[in-house]
Length: 385
Image (cartoon, rainbow, N blue to C red):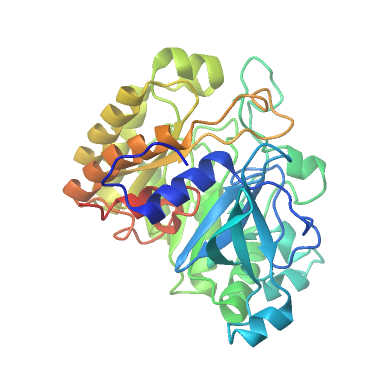
């Protein structure tokens, strides 16, 4: 167990440690364990598995044997029935073979068994993230991905396409069809629409707007977040909102210029100052607390840089979704170690305090990765005294 502050909530600390060191294979192989299978590659969360501890669902990185003290022991259906538990697959989280928490594994959604009217399996259009979140990468390509001098070193957006687990471009009609079924059959509560970055000035906002409008027409009450890089014309923010997007995500990820140039050379050409101007314009449209960004700890930024940027963001009304770096197989950063649990705990406590004091919290968001919170332990720290 990492050395933590005496005031740290034990549950929060467990979440931080679990996401930092991940989950190792157990006697229940990944393919044999019930529930939503672990996801490999693609636009994040990648190389993760969803686990629920109480009312909180986490996307937990999957590690090779010997790389994590945590493993999962899935209970048999008879064990769950004997305990009078719910139908969702249940298990025990072990740290060094010692039980530390009871967990539930979100069940494979019913909509995965269906195909669209044009014959594409629903699971190639959108996926269940965490427990009640539907997510889709509407364009599964990026203008930088195949250029080694431009590509983000931690990204694997092309791998799921190469593995035939998705299709290159999801149409508005396909997404509307899948979203309606996911809400009706599986109780999905929000939708996240993200995109690879195309070589167009709108940076993908045009297709996102078309997809959001189609989903809004099919499922009027489903909260939607759209995610893209800052478009050249900030008028796209209003167009996205008018199309049906409730919140907006624009992901800075790294903050120090040297770090950005090293790990995301192409994206670093979009300066932090432009992101800040875009955030200010987007908050004017979507409202305080309805615009968010990823801050990824472990890419090389100093802790004080991440905390300082988080402070700037919350003062603007932008939610700083702090997540730990997760190395993804097949990427140039696959062998880079993620940040330690103690590092993340310290960051979470500082950013959690900023979020709490500003009122720009995950609970106040209508939709999006911050609202879901499963790829970070930040929401567990937001209410800490």
